Image (tube, rainbow, N blue to C red; front, side, top):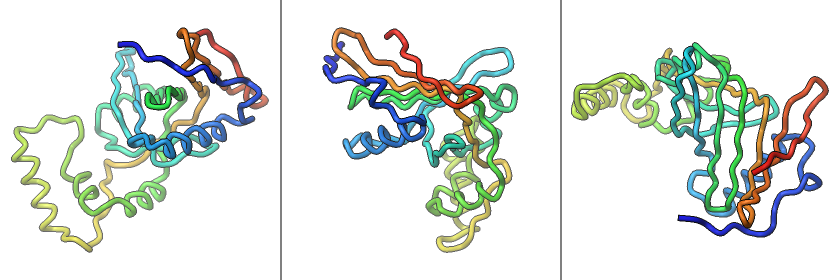
Length: 207
């Protein structure tokens, strides 16, 4: 189960000065290439004892101040971030033989930003945020569906649904951003931006 990678790689001279600008280039290329949900990323967290967990979430915003996702603060990832805010994000763009790996510190976004994003979500997704106590146990699928039906009756389509108090966003303030490009003979290109006191430095890593 091995894939053949392309000869063309990633050189230092082709990089943007800022990692977010470089990410923007690659993200738009991934989207234009037809990849399914290029904003899907693997968020890895660890608890206070260093025990890791990972899950796929969706990137909702990005900029020079970081990468933003939204979730239930009471979920496993939310509890682990509360204990240990250092996380990683992995964008696995296998279809174009690229990956981006972000490491940094996750901090909650402001409530106003959470509410503004929540209002943009589809009606059913808003109800789902209320119905699901993410990562907690539930007796059956029927119980979950009953909770959703109760909420749908309380907040019919077109009626305003408030943002749950336990639901909100995190901004991952990036400390390193690695760009991985698949190459022939497993000699992949790995270029990593690392934050310094004066800006960003770029390091080439062995594949």
